[in-house]
View 1 (cartoon, helix red, strand yellow):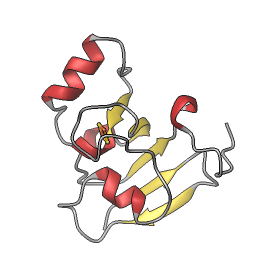
View 2 (cartoon, helix red, strand yellow; view 1 turned 135 degrees about the vertical axis):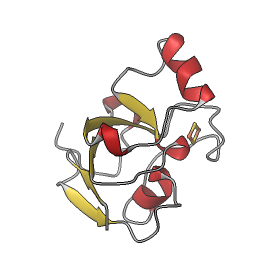
View 3 (spheres, protein in one colour; view 1 turned 60 degrees about the vertical axis):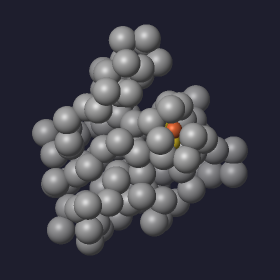
View 4 (cartoon, helix red, strand yellow; view 1 turned 120 degrees about the horizontal axis):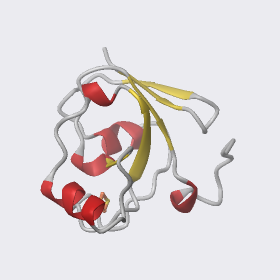
Length: 106
Ligand code: FES
């Protein structure tokens, strides 16, 4: 059972039951996470910084490649609504998409 750890949110740990869920849906099962366009790959607010386990992520989608080219998504960031996982992953919430009511450590 893959595990997702959110490093800068008290290392919150989520055990994933269903690998068909997007990384965003896995995160949303345990915490609030910004997703302004409704999971359609049309914004970058759902992005996560991948600290480890990038080999357990699905291939980057066309929107992710486009946003990377436009410098709106860093090489180590993924759109969580576009990403599936197949193993353990550690992520962090980028500063610019942190929610004001949650307590991040960095
Ligand atoms: S919610 Fe907008 S790109 Fe993921």
